[in-house]
Image (cartoon, rainbow, N blue to C red; front, side, top):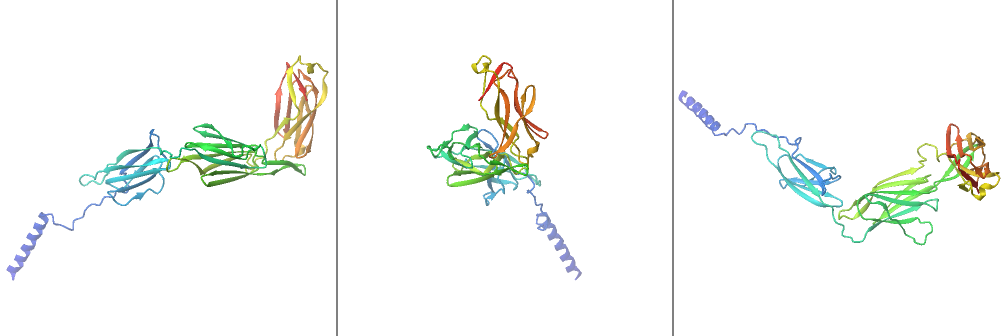
Length: 376
C-alpha cells in the first residue's frame, strides 16, 4: 500500500510540472483593457478653404462592425473612443457633399493598454445646386400701415434686390427675394404703424396698439411671426444649403427684434418734438427777408411716451433771448403745439424743445447768425 501511495503522488507532481512548463495553466488571469476613456481618433472637420465646420453629422464603424452615430452634430472636431481598429468615418452636412475617411488605430504593444491616438483632417466640399434658376423667398407684410417698407441685407452680399409680387400695387405688401448662396440674412421693416392714436384718460397718455405680421414662404413651407405695437422690426435668419447645395431659408433660426418693444416695460414711443410748418433757410439778401418781421403761428407735434402726465409736459421755443412756452392741446389723437415766432426770423437763434419732468428733447438748436428763416 505504501508503494502505491508514493507512486501516485510522484505522478501527480510530474504531470503538474509538465503542464506548467507547457503554459497550460488555463486558470491564469488575463488583463482586460478599458478603452472608453481614451481617444482613438481625433478628426478635424474643415471646408475646402480650411475653415472649421459646424453642425456636421458623423457616423462611424470599427472593423466593419455596425454603424454608430454620434448623439449630436459635431462642431469642428470629432473625437472617437472605441479602442484600436480600423475606423470608417462618414460625414454629412446640408449643402456639402458627403465624404468618408478610413483611419487605422494600431493595437497597444506588449502588455500596455495605452492607445496611441490618430489625428486626421477631413475636407468637406460644397455641393453644387442642380437648379439653374434662382430660388425665391416670399416676404409678406400685414400691418395697419400702407407705407411699410422692407430692406434685405445679406452677409456676404450686401443689400439684396426685392421685387414686388404685384407690379401694379402702389404700396407693396408681398415681395420676392432671390436666394443665391448661403448667408446671414437681415430683413428690416419700417413704418409698420404699430402705435395707434394717442388716448388720454384722467390726464395720462396711452396708445392703442396694432398688430403686424411678418410671413415668410419658400418651397411650400411658411413661417409667420406676429408683433404688437411695433413701428419697425429687424428679422435675422440663416440661409443655408440643402442636401444638394440649393439655398434654403432656415426658419428655425429666425430672430425678430422690434422697436419699440412694448413688452419690455419701458415707456414708448420715444419722447420727441418736430416742426410741422414749412421752413425756408436763405441768405439775408433774399426778397422775403426784407419784410418787417410779423408774429407767425409755427406748428409743432410732440410724441409723448405712454404713461406721461399731460400736466408735466412743456413745449418751448427760444424767442427774444429766452425760452417761451408754446400753447399745446390734444387733437385727433395727436399732441399739437403752436408758438408765435417772428417771420422772417433774421439773425436770431432758432430752437425748440420738449420737457417732461427731468427729461428733455431738443428738436433743433442752431444759431443761424448769417441766415434768414421764413416760415410758411
